[in-house]
Length: 483
Image 1: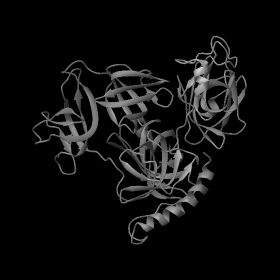
Image 2 (image 1 turned 120 degrees about the vertical axis):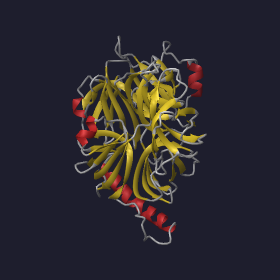
Image 3 (image 1 turned 60 degrees about the vertical axis):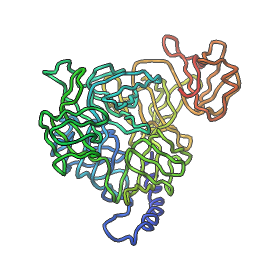
Image 4 (image 1 turned 90 degrees about the vertical axis):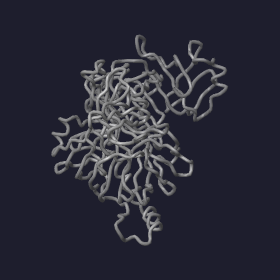
């Protein structure tokens, strides 16, 4: 997104928010700072780049920042990066944002993984996605939008991994980062290190076991209890660090600490990225444990449908525990493109993808993540003509804006998006690109007559064309809804 456009939109929308927030209080005085352009607050989202720290499209200067990585304190960004802080992790930035909305200064950067443990029951979901569970917690991994370190897609049974991501609408974790930590130990004498978060249940005293998320926590090793009360109580939300091995009946705890599940009751300015849940269709929903009221918010794009499972960025203020949104920005769309790069440009943040019927201009912004399958993070300057890429994107006012770009070895050409036009049993047009169909086109479980009988303008359709070993010819090899 153009940062300056976002500045002007926020400047207008936050005037509305100021009135809303003030109406909820006796006055606009007191300790609560009403959100505005620039100010001190919290930014929570995926780290997209370093050289400073980029989160939610804001470049935060970290020269004077303290870093906390999985509970360990570091006094500089190089130390934190050496300790493992990297792109793809979901972090909280405490600090100020400048009036331009694109830069800021961090006083504190905090990263805490969502869970660490063994992969169990890996399942191929199709479409480049898979799921598995760790101690009963479902994890969703996407081979394009999930950053993988020390492992590869697909992950396998008993692989030990650290996961960062967003809690989704069904309590699963939509992984933004997964790091391989080896293989789960099979031996009780040399168990693996694990971590999980959850609510205390069945606690009697510090000499007895209790459970978290249905899993037994063994207290026999006299773990460190690092909580505000110095003890535990049923209902406490905690993080347990301990050891585990194959077929163990419990996690042997070595440290237990309070886990902060929220942002506080009053936050003057907050930018929060995450997955929508509990949406009521009237502007109220949740992101993780945070309740959001977006009844007076500006949507970007304006035709966005905010429903469970959608990834968004919300900007606003927290008052009385509720995040009153000034703006809700869609950060995940239905567009997926697979093709060779035809040209870098014409703009500084654009490249073109080649299809038989023409080219699609892809725009990037401050939150676009670019990766190479083998090399890891890259920049737009690293792309060259004829590179094959996979793009996940949203459409804004007719423009394609990439959220993720991954360069890899040549595969088939594909296009997925909203149908703009079609001729039954003849052709389909998506993003200005027309593919024809013929007797060789595969419609999956249906046939041409059934497919076109159901097809409507605006439906999300995926089309696959040849690329290897034969070049694309503009004739759909496979076609289907969604995908």
